[in-house]
Length: 409
Image 1: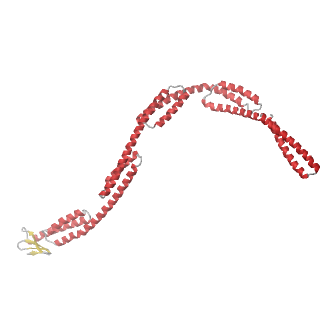
Image 2 (image 1 turned 180 degrees about the vertical axis):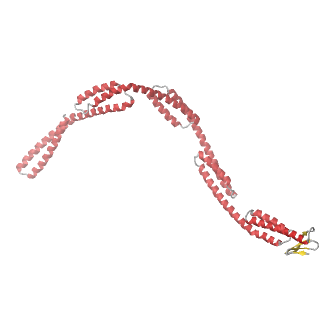
Image 3 (image 1 turned 45 degrees about the horizontal axis):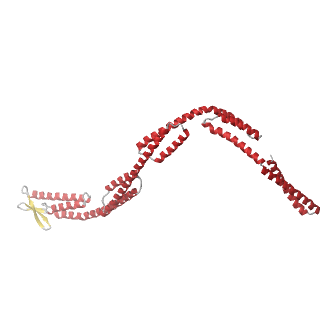
């Protein structure tokens, strides 16, 4: 009989393994010697030991999920328990048992990780919902739709959370998207309606502008074009292709009218240039009448020159303001001179001034009489009062006489 620490070979060639429960037959190896038979079954044990070692490494490195690892342990354990091999099978079982607390720790860690990810996912979904609801209450019709699509993709990328919370958040998110889409459609429907209304208005305005394009009533027609432009701006945008075509018609009619008006004005300006030369010479003579010395003579000379001014005719538009302004300045100076002359010769004011002189002269005569009496009486105090009074009244009399002279011319 051939034996080792963990097994033996009987004389009939049967191989036994030693276990805690006694010996157990694992087979025979009739093709070889007892030593070869024992070696054969010992190598089987080594193969099992290596498989257990690989499983330990994969479990400790978390190459398997706890569930996958538990299933692998169960499979290997069955192989070890019924193994036809010679070796310390109990130690292999113990090594497999030692993996149980490792799996428990991993399961707990994974539960904590899943809980943390669920909280992160819930927070992210709540944030998505809040942003979607904010977009739904806004009016950013262009960017809002794009942003909601991005939020939907972000939602899909997040893991599910507990069903009640996930369903409730999804209901809010979906409701916000629906509300926004409905409002957006309504907005663009209203815009389409407004654009159609604008098209009708602008077609009418373009037709009227084209009808006025050949008008030669420059002032009234230019005013009407201003009104049409105001109405055009107030109408708002029509559909873009239609709007561009209508604007081309409207602007073309405007350009035709104002081009014709500008051409005629340019011809008139050339015709009126000679008139401006005449008025340039006349205004020099007219301005030379100032300052006014003899009002009546100046007025007569001004009337003669003004008749020549009117006879000279119109001047180019770019000269009108300058020439007319200089003419108005002379007219204003003459009018001011006439007003001053009238004020000085106003009969009512002259009469009041003369009356004031007479009254002051009478009052001074009385004060002089009283002063002589006070001096004769030796009343120095009274003399002083009357002298002061007399000086004041004589000062007023001088002022009144000068005013009277002004009003009398």
